[in-house]
Length: 125
Image (cartoon, rainbow, N blue to C red; front, side, top):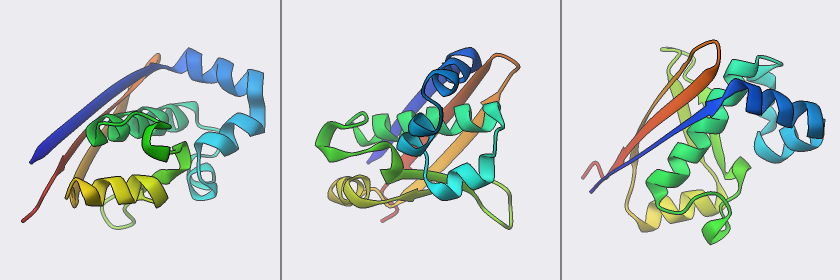
């Protein structure tokens, strides 16, 4: 089985959300490791936001359906290649296991105004 997800977000929308809701928003959406990695880089935060949405779409759930929260989907960086590295936690991990999805690929990109993420998930067996 092959599943995909894609999401795009305006950087301005992310900036407004951070200005309006501050740390409460950041801690609700991102894991501590993601916040450490991204710092205040708006394009990094927006790219990970889009990636979380894209992963949820590949899972067929969206965020909050089936109990999947924002921090159940974590996007860090592979220390060797620098590529995005996905870790699923809690409900997201259980749902992926139920769908037999065990191999993931993520691509992130951004312009001066937008960030986009594309995700492919499959069963490697």
